[in-house]
Image (cartoon, rainbow, N blue to C red; front, side, top):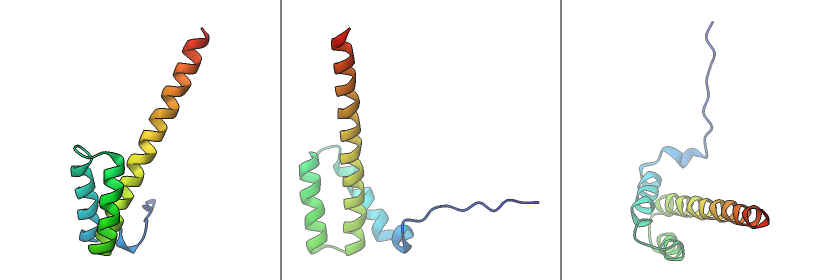
Length: 85
């Protein structure tokens, strides 16, 4: 007996090459640009570029922002608990 495994899909665009290219561009740019600069570039993609490329870029920028917020929250918690000791 075999068990069917399914994967979650974020939309029909998830396998589109333009979406993947947008995410790849964001991964490349995040090494040299700040988060605000990435967000500005995502807005430019949305205004002047291919919509799926803009969506992929914006998705990665949002993930990067959430990663930074999580790190900030963890560091704040550590600083608060370490200072009490």
